[in-house]
Length: 522
Image 1 (cartoon, one colour):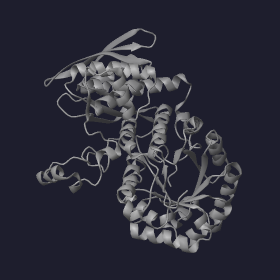
Image 2 (cartoon, one colour; image 1 turned 135 degrees about the horizontal axis):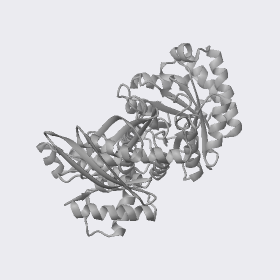
Image 3 (cartoon, helix red, strand yellow; image 1 turned 90 degrees about the vertical axis):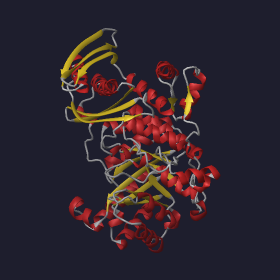
Image 4 (spheres, helix red, strand yellow; image 1 turned 30 degrees about the horizontal axis):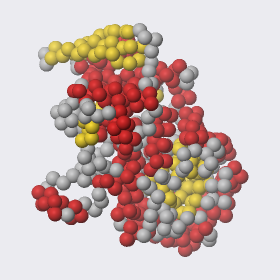
């Protein structure tokens, strides 16, 4: 591999999923893993297999698909974690075991209660065990940016001698700044024997808004792998944003002299896919993939753009996968054109799913004057969630007024073909719809959060509803879409109910679904 190649290590499915409300189903993780493979990332950190049976199953399923990227799993420095990772990832032709242990003084004293020598012994033993199972082993000293430089160099030296092929330097709590991080990497290059024979990696969090800047500083100082997530999702303020750091390297290639193998035309569709699955809306002013990233409203900017695009655009929308014309299809569009656009948006549907989505597209096209990419994305997400059964929404009738309570009358169709109907009255139409759904299905939920967004533009735009609920101490998230915002909310609520019922059918208890250890943050 050329020295100017930067490996992109995507941890959307591990660190990204740890963001509150971002937990994903197995099907959703498989869909994202395919999108990441199409994006051409080098490594996919698919999860933390020891966290729960669900995490183990997801990592194994992703590894068994064998789509090309290295499939990695995270482990603490103990035999059980390491064996679980190996069992989960070994189905992939290219797989990695990633072990970590905290090294900073504050973690040594308050979390681990271990001496420096004990931590090094622990790390060395774990790396050696992992190397017996897998040639490709990565090691991370958690909270490296707050670890004494001399001790950090000692830990990294021991990790390399034990057999780690990649050593990752995490800014676990987003504490460092670019100049300081640059000095840290240069110190390691000067004081660690054999560091030129391994890949130095960087993993930054965004607590101070500098995850991308710190990652680029590390690259400038010798790092050759960046750990990042789509849309920068992750714990607290999130991680280094994949699309931002990749486009920074590409756009400023004359400065960095570094390349990635990322297919940048897949950035926008992948970002939209992850946003739709996680329910984490992309801010309009988000760099690279936000709605305003290539919008120019100021008169002086528009004038410059008309003369030459480079006056105010340092990238072309097509470079990141944004079509010049978002208005793509209409009610007379055929199935082939619809399939092409679906694939262009980053979705991989089988024939059954495509047919259902196309039918919904035709229905919506008869109602809406203009159809946008966002409409198609919303249809696909809605069809995918609806296929989870056993309940589907047949009819919803709402009666409400400023001086009266709202009443919702709902008809649901069960997978056995029987119709069930009930009604409920509440202060507002959304609450009435939720109560009616609970009465029919017998599932009582506690609503924790309700969000509503517009899928596209215009007065006939679809509304995207996202609900976060609690059931038996477990958090669930659902999404729904419709031109009627009450219907969108009802579909989101029903998606959660269906997910709970399906899991109960498979005999999964809430204890099995929830992590049995604390989620790891490196």
